[in-house]
Length: 65
Image (cartoon, rainbow, N blue to C red):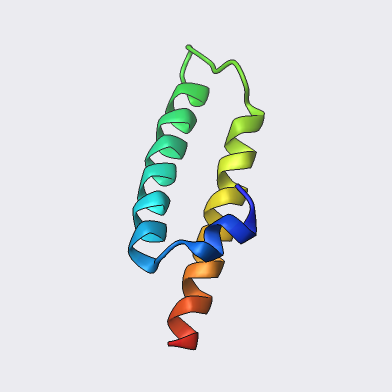
């Protein structure tokens, strides 16, 4: 997800997306730590990056209001 796409969203939309991505990250971490494993461990890193970007833009929008 690109920063420009995130900046166009409203704060409520960003918050919902953060919740969804954090839930997915938790699920992937549980699968990764269990005996199942996951196909793409790099997805965990990508989700962490996306969540950080979303939280950064959300914080910027709060400060600028």
